[in-house]
Length: 85
Image (tube, rainbow, N blue to C red):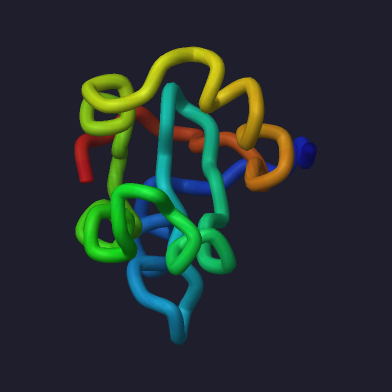
């Protein structure tokens, strides 16, 4: 886990494999670039949310156990501002 903080504008730049795919979930920033092709729901789902706050979409399809299992592995920091991207 990292204590690094990112502005939402910085996260928004990471929306494809070339720049990395980052998501915001509950104020935490996750780099899921290397997980995209392994995602059971398909790569397209994650790619659509790249660079955005994916909190609502994440909780719609996942329970707390998924975040507990994968969260620390992919978490790179927190977002400094609360903004819908």
